[in-house]
Amino acid sequence: MKHKIVTVFFILFLILLTLISFFVVIDVHFFIIVACFWFLIVFCGSTFVASNYHVKTYCSNPLENEKKIALTFDDGPNEMTLTVLDVLRKYNAKATFFCIGKNIANHPDILKKTIKEGHAIGNHSYSHSPFFDFYRKNQVISEIKQTDALIESVSGLKPKLFRPPYGVTNPSIRRALKVTEHQTIGWNIRSLDGIIKNEKFLLDRIVKRIKPGGIVLLHDTSSQTVSVLEELLSFLQKNNYTVVPLEELLNIKAYAN
Image (cartoon, rainbow, N blue to C red; front, side, top):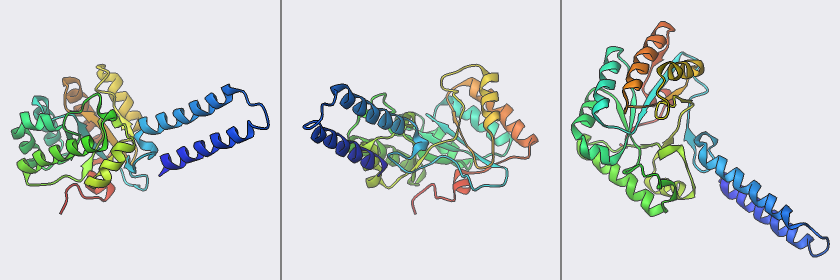
């Protein structure tokens, strides 16, 4: 609703300016500034998933007082997922994997193993296309349903959790999620492991942001993530943090009944 309110407000404001311009000279640049300001608000609201601008998003549990956090992994499954699973098993930590549909189609056995080891699975679209943010409502619905069907065919479980590609939301995604009835999951601790390769930088970035109720965003797609994950889990253990399933941290269900 925030996007609707902002848009209606700016439209009414521009109409008011237009009416005033019949009586007072208003520089055209003022209209342009107002339009640019609207665009800036929409851009920031769409880009930062934690803003809840288009869609209500779970990015953490600010009410959590105990030292509990959740780990999430995007973009699998692939061969590197198996190594991530080994590290998680070593520390008895459960995570949530937001999977891409086309990768599930290529690695159904890895998805099956992930579920068997007690980890939750979320939907991360079918293609993770760089043009996903420009898809119309029906295209978004199709991507989500395709991935749901693949997860269900492997596990018998229909996921309720969705993480939008790149963490971007817009009116089309909002309308699509209203149809599919998924809950949107974001994060409040972004590792940047999909962009930066320096392991020390990645670990320091995460550790500085660790606090109760946090959700960490990682990717099960690279070797540096595996190394950082091992050090992160060791740090959490030494500092008496518990890695809990996303369901427990947020008190929500990962799958439909």
